[in-house]
Image 1 (spheres, one colour):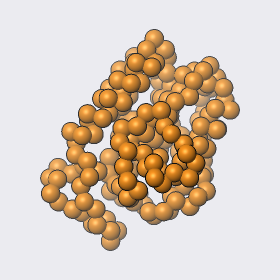
Image 2 (cartoon, helix red, strand yellow; image 1 turned 90 degrees about the vertical axis):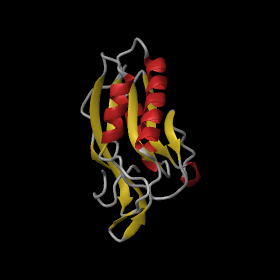
Image 3 (cartoon, rainbow, N blue to C red; image 1 turned 30 degrees about the vertical axis):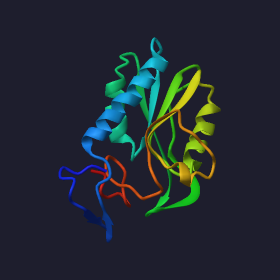
Image 4 (tube, rainbow, N blue to C red; image 1 turned 60 degrees about the vertical axis):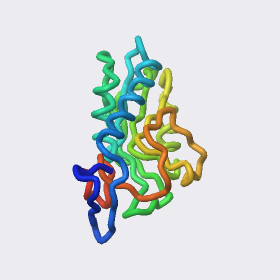
Length: 176
């Protein structure tokens, strides 16, 4: 997503990628989304759940910007991709150990593509009776949706192109 020199393309695993978003655009949208979350959760004690591995950079920046001191962070890991394609099957690789009953929960994800993983997480976590359950994503590919899932907070709506950088990867590479 971001390269220091925006006029350069890179090649990863034989695929060519061109810059799409720069640092300033990302920082501005992280601040906007953080402001929305702060407004909605003011005076509460939210639990932010970062979806590993892709959302770690976005989650760190977002949680810092939200700035709610009495909050906590947990991690889950789901997978539905192999290479550049979704498998259509969502696997939970690392579940949540924390008790979320009665808590205000915000799931932080890197990208919502088909919506299958987002729906699975909302179902899994919703069954644990949180006070509220919200979903924040860096990127949303509306036109790729198979579920109609709409996140509560979206930094960018993008076309159905494959994106890398700022935590998003290609088979574990190019997250930076």
